[in-house]
Length: 226
Image 1 (cartoon, rainbow, N blue to C red):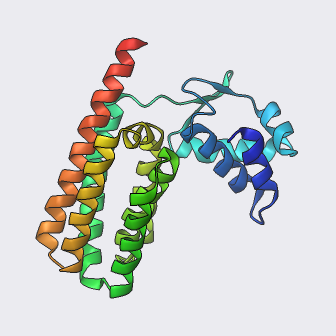
Image 2: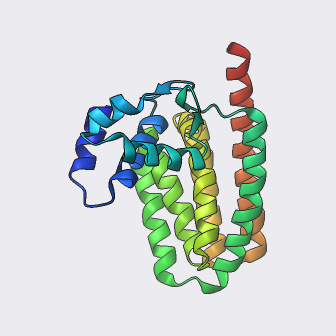
C-alpha cells in the first residue's frame, strides 16, 4: 500500500473531499508511509490528490485534532510523536471512558450484538496483517460500546484509539501479545453475554492497563534510541 493507492481509493468515494483526504493521510500515518516527525507538504499532497490546498489544510486540521499531526506556523504539518507520558495519560482516560461505556452497554445488549462481536473475533483469529488486526480490534470494542447509545462518548474513545493505533500495530504484530489480547477479548465477550457487569469491568480495565504498560515500555525504548 502506498499514498498513490490511498489517493486512488479516495477519488472513487462519494464523501466530502477533506474527510476523504483525512482518511487517506490517517491510514498513511498509521501504516508507516509517513513516519514520526516527517513533514507533510500541503502542495505535494494537493497534487497527489488532484485538489487545491484548501481541502488538504482542512484534512490536516482534522488529523491535528486526533493527535496525529502537529501544525506549525512556519514549518507546516509534522507527523506527531507519541511520548510514553502521553501514552500513559491516554490509557488512563481510555480506561475511565471505556469502563463507563461497557457499564452503560451491558444492560442493553441483544443477541445480535453478541453475535456481531463474535464474528469479529472469528475474523481476528484468521487475520495476520497488523493493520487488519488493528481495525478488527477497534471494531470489536466499538461493537460492545455502541449499544450504550452514547455517540459522543464513542467518538472520544475512537479518537484515543487512533492516537495509539500506529504503535498498537507494532504490538499486534507480536504473536505473544496478539494471542493474549484475543484471549482477553473472548473473556470480555463472555462476561458481556452473561450480563456480568462487574466481571466485564474488571476484565476490560485489566485489558487496557496491560496493553498500556506494554505500549509505554515500547515508547520508552524508542525514546532511548533517538
